[in-house]
Image (cartoon, rainbow, N blue to C red; front, top):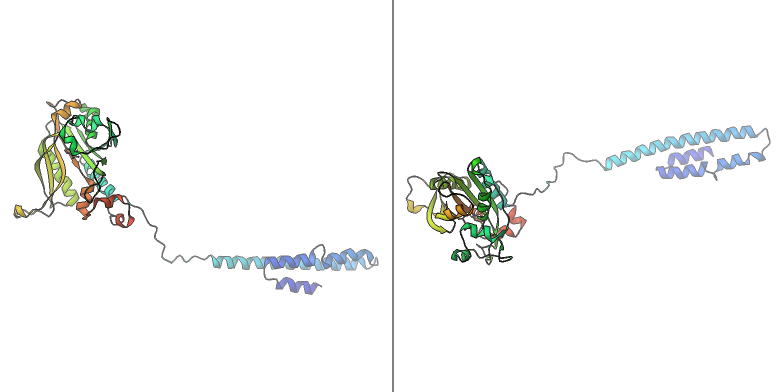
Length: 337
Ligand code: PHE
């Protein structure tokens, strides 16, 4: 009995099989229990002998089982560790990282530059009052130039802003000139009732710039915009100002950046100019409407288009690409600026 049981214990392949062996030999219905139960039928002098023997067998089996169990558990652990081994020398799987949208990159790059020149970045509401978007920008209700900016109206007095210029008025009325000059840029989305095509989007971006102080000249405007052009396209690019018209600036200019690098010995006719933004000296009416005395203060303003900048910088031919959110398009632009 003892040897047969020991044989089964050592043959059991895993903890589960071992447990079955234990129940079979040592359980309530097992042969050892049987022997002990049968003691009462034995002669009194035989009982101690059989009892001692049965106990000895039970101890031997119990010890053998627990040793086998420890052994089997160690094997199982080894197998599990082997199965879960990680090869730390394998190359890792790259985690795809997100990135700012190309327009956001352009805007942040411009913000960095303007902050470096002492400008504040101020944002205004996209749902705007007619009052700020037009009236305060010297565009009364019947002004023909309102047609230049086809407007989404929400009510007769509330609209989707057609330009970032209303932030000029909001900033001017809040500015305390005893604390110093006003220098701000305001990036954001603007809306116009245009039919979307390669060069028009009913929603696009602008970045407004405004500087108000005593003794600001057009030279300050030109120097500021030249710095922007250099930052965006490189030091060799020049700008030129052409007369234009905006209701909120006088004089007004359209600003071109040279598409090609300009060298001192170059024939001026060989420079290719592309129009990039509108600007001018803030109209006295605009200052007055925001409570600033045009006899004392003056300044310049500009409105540039990040979408257009991105199109020129990267050779993107269709503005709609910026708004389709196709990752194959967007992941091409993964460096700052
Ligand atoms: N707001 C003008 C536009 O949307 C651009 C501009 C801004 C022009 C500031 C002059 C000064 O066309």
